[in-house]
Image 1 (cartoon, helix red, strand yellow):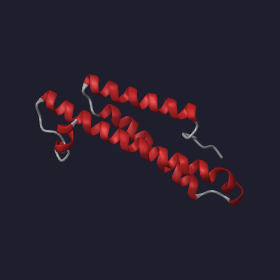
Image 2 (cartoon, rainbow, N blue to C red; image 1 turned 45 degrees about the horizontal axis):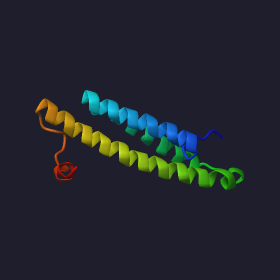
Image 3 (cartoon, rainbow, N blue to C red; image 1 turned 90 degrees about the horizontal axis):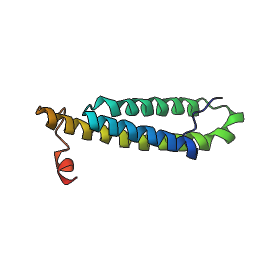
Image 4 (cartoon, helix red, strand yellow; image 1 turned 60 degrees about the vertical axis):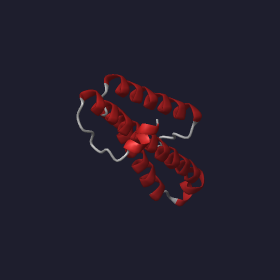
Length: 113
């Protein structure tokens, strides 16, 4: 069974660096869809890990259960980070282009940052 183990330190570091670089690139060119790539990638990973967890056989349950739970929790944290990065860059892009953002429900949050 192949598992993308994002709970290993090297893999976690590489995924974090890639996510930060996508967020930085999106901020620099003011395009909110660039950090959305990271969001969709982590959504695919959480679905993939959940399906693998649901389809574990008894012989693999002892070995892979804890790994998959850690991977799902890390995926959820990264989804949270990349979603807020998308909203943040969308707010920056809307102010730069002087047009209305998709949703202004987080204005109280951005004003405190």
